[in-house]
Image 1 (cartoon, helix red, strand yellow):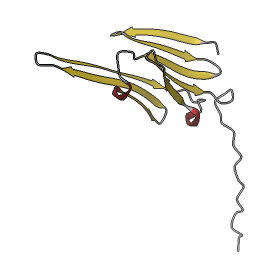
Image 2 (cartoon, rainbow, N blue to C red; image 1 turned 180 degrees about the vertical axis):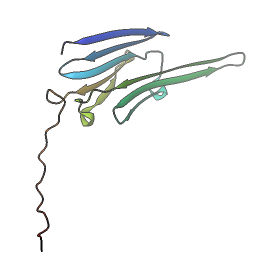
Image 3 (tube, helix red, strand yellow; image 1 turned 90 degrees about the horizontal axis):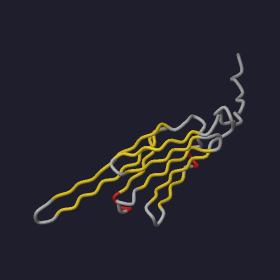
Image 4 (tube, rainbow, N blue to C red; image 1 turned 60 degrees about the vertical axis):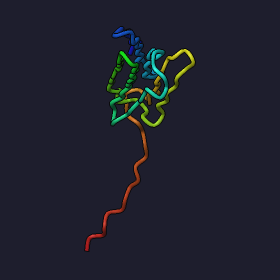
Length: 117
């Protein structure tokens, strides 16, 4: 597999996605949001990043929100996913990939069948 990078620009939210042989990674510019206004969820293989903020004053109300979702590849190690928010407001989610082909290898115990009587 070659490296796949895409840049999406939508409502000033910049997203970079990397899906190569080593990892699946997402970087999102969330500099317009405070950390407490952000959530990252993983449900099954579906990764969701969302942000929501509201500003109220005597004469105005402003709300800004976004939701981005990705289905993670089969060979991503779900237990090793890490998120990080840096000081400049870039949120990154990185998931290493397992062995090529997507199959995680594990040893299965051989159970003894009940004796026939």
